[in-house]
Amino acid sequence: MPHDPDLRGDQPGAGILDRAMLILRYMATAHEATAADLAEAASISRSTAYRIAHRLEAWGMLQPHHEPGRWIVGPEALRLGVSVLQRSQVAHVAAEPLHHLSDLTQETTGLAVRIDRTMVFVHRNPGPRPSPISSRIGAVRPLHCTAVGKAWLAALPEEELGAVLLGLPLEKHTPATLVARAVLERDLALVRRRGWSLDNGEINTATAACGAVVLDDQGRPIAAISASGPIGRVARRAEQIGPVVASTAALISRRLGYQPN
Image (cartoon, rainbow, N blue to C red; front, side, top):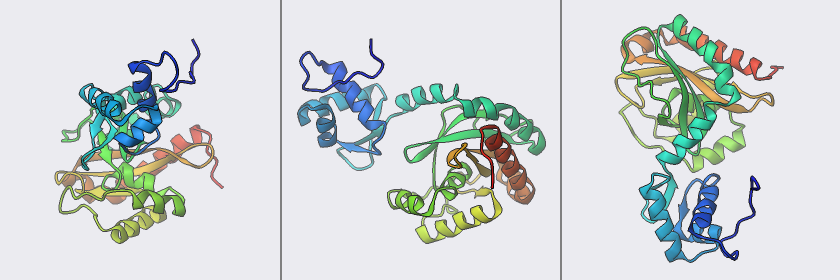
């Protein structure tokens, strides 16, 4: 059986499963899609695309976009992706440094990768102290108001960052969430200068986190790490925790082959 079949929706013998797989393949690279987009991707009618999309939605492979008539990747598809990413090189390399980071900071640490417009945690190391932070693998977090998300965004080239921000809904989660693009860009500039990010109650008023980006051997962002905990405990120690998170991310990056200039 070939690993990457050349399937087309109009190919003789193509069935509903083939068309569903074509839709999922399309969604792997598309941020979102309408029924027309799915119909074109699978060479089927819009009515058939609607029926397949609703079945995929029922299985959690797709989920409705906040705009009616559009879909995004669903939680079950993300879960499958996370199960693969957990076995990836970056998750393997990061495990020991993240455990050490938990010991140093006494907080929960984690590794997240970007999937679409979110960061998804593929590794968590619970800290030794009580914390409201979830240690659930597969937790999905926004890009613009989390330590891992802002660390990732700050590492993007300027032109790419502009394109990402242009299509990124800056939704308000707490009174501290940065929802103005200019304010977020200033915060990302600060992240670049000091080498670490801070979520100070921006996604949850009870929590804070420091984050830093992990780079691959080409110097591109491949993941981000964080140390998180209660806001009263982490925010006041951010100037101590942040640099330790940054040095841990740098260590992981070097072990992945990145060589700073």
